Amino acid sequence: MKAWDVIVIGAGAAGLMCAAEAGKRGRRVLLLDHGKRIGRKILMSGGGRCNFTNYFIEPGAFLCENPHFVKSALARYTQWDFIALVEKHGIAYHEKTLGQLFCDDSAQNIVDMLVKECDDAGVTIRLRSNIDSVASLGEGFAVTTDNDQYSCQSLVVASGGLSMPKIGASAFGYKLAEQFGLKVLPTRAGLVPFTLQPEDKATLEPLAGVSLPVVAESEDGTRFAENLLFTHRGVSGPSVLQISSYWQAGEQVHFELLPAGRLTQGIADSPNQELKTWLSRHLPKRLVDTLLEREKITNKPLKQYVPKEVAAIEQLLAAWPLKPGGTEGYRTAEVTLGGVDTDELSSKTMMAKKVPNLYFIGEVVDVSGWLGGYNFQWAWSAGWCAGQVV
Ligand SMILES: Cc1cc2nc3c(=O)[nH]c(=O)nc-3n(C[C@H](O)[C@H](O)[C@H](O)COP(=O)(O)OP(=O)(O)OC[C@H]3O[C@@H](n4cnc5c(N)ncnc54)[C@H](O)[C@@H]3O)c2cc1C
Image (cartoon, rainbow, N blue to C red; front, side, top):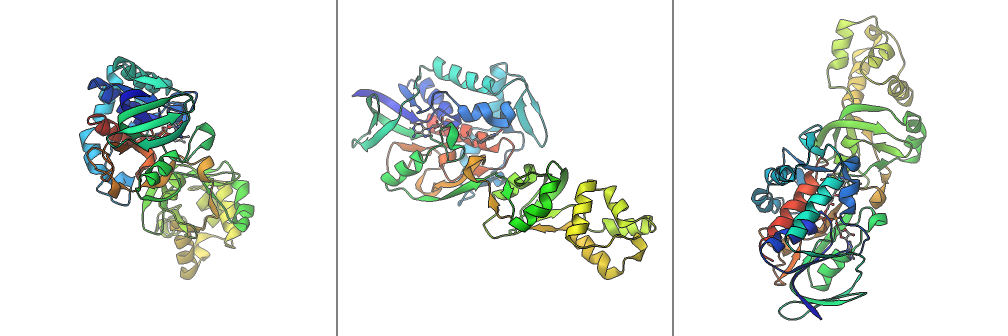
């Protein structure tokens, strides 16, 4: 059995960061992955340009049963630390919107950077390694793969969540946590498009391709001001992906298409204009036609609407209700909500409180961020923290 100081399972964002940091401390590190390529999610992220962090990282942008858990790691390894690393490697980047930072060129730059950090730190990376079993050795762990057997003092699980099974996502980390008696919170898809109820699908499908700025609001009052996109399968766009993480099956989502009071102002400004004409100045015409038809609103000059009708239309525009049929699930989700319960882990080191020298980092943990570079920052921060102590 070959002996290592540290074995990290999962050569994704968190695992690469952790392995490089541990290697820099002189630890002999083996990084295992069952896939053929390193950092496959990084490569496909941000439309191939990797939205690697965000200028506005803050604990409130993360979903976790214990909202305080993320604070320590995010403060110890910040977005500025990761930006400094990116700059040290000469990678050109830009802010797209809302503080989101992307590579100018390609996500491959980020993978190359992390691999270089690992190489410089003497990390050994073995791909195509399927883990058959993990066992406790008292002081450390035995890891058996389909082609070798290893022992290690510290074991780090960085195997990610369930989204995108086609590129190697697996339930490995959750099962391992359970094997060692740790609690795993129920998982579900997050940052994911909504599908529609059959009757909504029939009326809204013709809007496929229509996009507009809205404010999406979940039943718990969380709000995101970003774009809404109608698709052939349902609704998507950043506002929908964001709000999907706060949505539970059976709940409604409301979209503010126009702020309250706009129509009343419109009536005062252009009383002779027809509703359809006025609305089409503010919203995509195809959406206006569909809304009026769906809601059975008669089109007439604005001054002819009685106060009760005005109030109803204002309400519809300020909070258009939609009850999703479901989500597109792990096939297209960007993250997995839920996972290893943070109560089981040290927020400073990510070590399991009950199992010395066993660590969980990245998406496998019950921490998910907003869209916009937050999830990678969690992976870098958690990976870095574990890397200092394993
Ligand atoms: C399409 C898409 C786009 C995204 N874009 C962004 C973005 O732009 N910005 C952002 O912040 N976040 C983005 N995300 C989310 C981000 O990719 C994840 O949050 C992040 O990759 C999690 O890092 P991780 O290291 O925990 O897991 P991963 O990066 O998923 O790495 C896990 C690794 O473990 C390996 N593994 C899994 N099971 C096993 C096993 N049984 N044995 C061995 N190895 C195993 C996998 O092959 C993988 O290499 C995106 C996600 C998707 C799906």
